[in-house]
Image 1 (cartoon, one colour):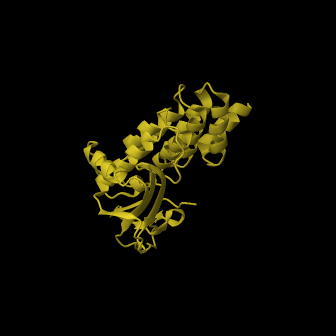
Image 2 (tube, one colour):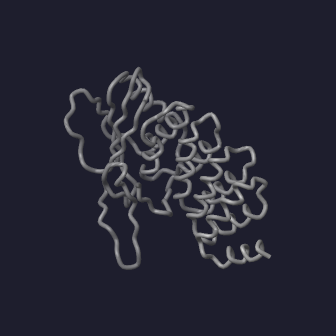
Image 3 (tube, one colour):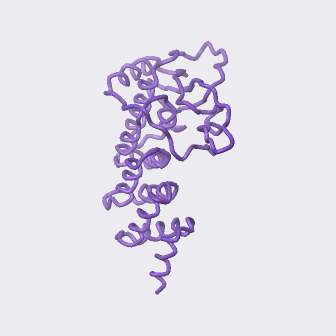
Length: 249
């Protein structure tokens, strides 16, 4: 399971879509087979393949040794369409004469390309997580794009769920507010809204608990109220206990 830092740093605003279109053309021009590309990882990203990637977690007495490194992504194409995304951090590519290597691109260009890829899959099945490379890209803010993806019903539920998951890792009140708005959106997909409730439960208690209490008290969907109550029960927060006592009375 991917290990992630709960407060994911975001440092700069993603620019317009032109760089993504340029990289998209370079990728799709390969037609069939494997396309490789690399870009700088955000500070503190520790290497491995997708299941072993982590973002540095420092406590008051210990800090892991995570040197600056590249994110490496292998894309599998058929007729110019991407069918799988494999993400690694660090290491090096093994020789493969059949693979096209686009070299090192800018993290902004890469982040926007993968956001665009996630948005354009529609309901099409895509192996791997197309959002993970954008999350790992250095000096790029992606959470507004994640909100957009999470709200679009034409995008597959799986990818919308991944967008909500990564929102749950983003730092700052804005990302928490975005999760709250997704969870309370009566027009949204129930499963995606439940994922947003879970993501709220992973936020700081000062941010997540009040939002969960509000959902448990006022949401019109009984299943979502139950979900909020369940995650409140895991917090052992005194405010949650007060709510349970009130309900039982």
